[in-house]
Structure formats: structure tokens, C-alpha cells
Amino acid sequence: HHLAKSIANASWRIFRQMLEYKCEWYGKKLIAVDPKNTSIICSKCGYNSGAKPLEIREWTCSKCQT
Ligand SMILES: [Zn+2]
Image (cartoon, rainbow, N blue to C red; front, side, top):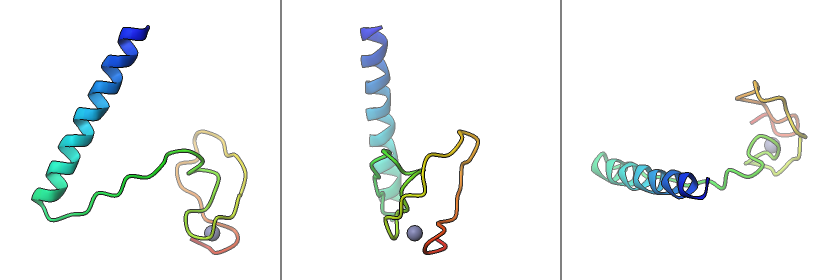
């Protein structure tokens, strides 16, 4: 289990490095976001709209309509 976890972490690190490289190559800016609570708290106004079921992949903030 521990080994699987370190392999997974290494893969993400490599993926992240490739992404950064590709973004630079195409003149794009990579913005890393803390994944914690992105489905709960609005990124624009900070409104907490509560937990949602897993099948909800996009949502509109009821306060600022983002
Ligand atoms: Zn909002």
C-alpha cells in the first residue's frame, strides 16, 4: 500500500512537470488550485454552497452566479 502510494505520488509529480513544460511551450499559464472544497466553496466570492453529490461536475454559485 505504501509503495503504491509513493508510485502514485511520483506519477502525479511527473504529470505536473509535463503539464508545466507544455504550458510554457504553448505560452500558457498553469494555475495550480488547491483541490480542497472546490465543489463546495465558490472560487469567486467564497460562498459556501454545501457538499454536492459526486455526479455534479459543474455548479453555479447562487450568490454571484459564477
Ligand atoms: Zn460566488
